Image (cartoon, rainbow, N blue to C red; front, side, top):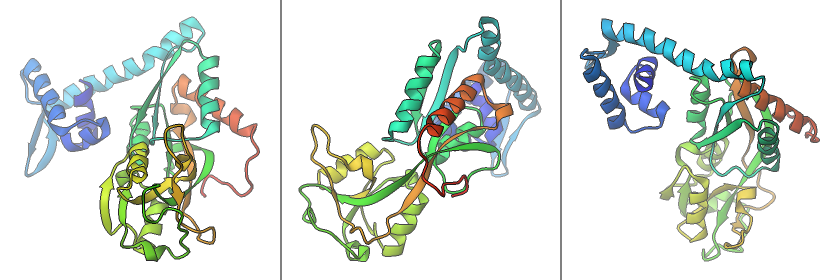
Length: 300
């Protein structure tokens, strides 16, 4: 029923699969199973596009009510208990290393002992869309152009440099002109590449020799580390770990590196779940206790 609701809401199976982060055949199978159980056809799919049948329209009304009741259940229980219960669903881009975020998660968990945290990793756009569709409560992402229907809390300004691993021939080399690296084998972050990083790459012709790609930054780091190619990483992701030597930053300090804002994204106050509302308040408190750099704004 949840899958059918998303199919109807998204206007098709392929769009629903993207939102649900599932493969298209699995979504199609769920739809067929529901149609078989009900012994009706819920939608038409063909060259003319996607549309719900009359039975599908009625089932969508029922599914909407079911989804509403399920989503309101934790709120109703909280009213009885006088304490937050349930699960706070958080969507994040991969491998965020940020002490302020760690503090927010730690404080929320300590102050809300009956709440569980469920953290999923996905590309930034999928996470933002999941907040819009109420599939998750909050997202921690970068986003160049905020959506008017969502609420944004600034976390930090993150900067990326171009790195190579210890076995790469460019290790210990500093480059002042990024264009000289245009022929190097490259590791990209796919759909999760920040727009500012993509613009920097295209400006200097970087990434023409694509060698590997992953939307998980830990895998991007691994491929850079073992010498598959060079690639962009946030500065904190390049630090040495117990089992890995530090990657080498290739671009000189004179180069204006790509940077962007990290946000905590949630629904507007009147649409938030109590858990999301509590987490937003936790983020506000943590960030207000920090000394924010001057000139940061929601539209930056």
